[in-house]
Length: 128
Image (tube, rainbow, N blue to C red; front, side, top):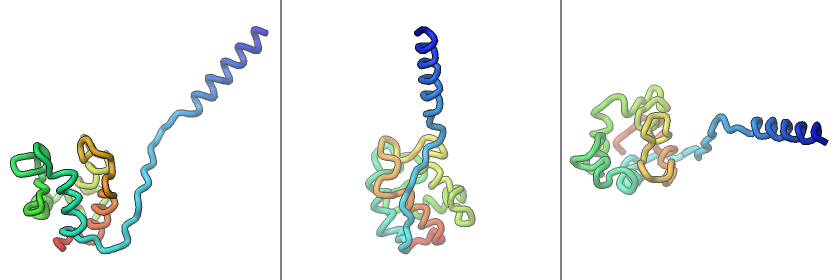
């Protein structure tokens, strides 16, 4: 009887050890339409990023208010990398590959922000 209990404990421990989560796979939609900076991204930035104490006037760079977002993102070449869009700091912060993950205190992909930003960068990061 004792051997059966020990065997059951060992099997239970092995089962639990095999259920460890090593990676998180984030599946995000692929955006196939032309992304408009003004119509698609600015409203998402306004709602999720250009808030008091965050990426607004007098806040943290880049300033993502509707009037300043494009110029602020283009001011530092690291924010947007059209040659390697996934390496853009903007995208890296949104996906949590750089810390702290953005937007702070919000879901990790509000309004499919990550997919829209990546598509926009892949499309040349135009001020459209």
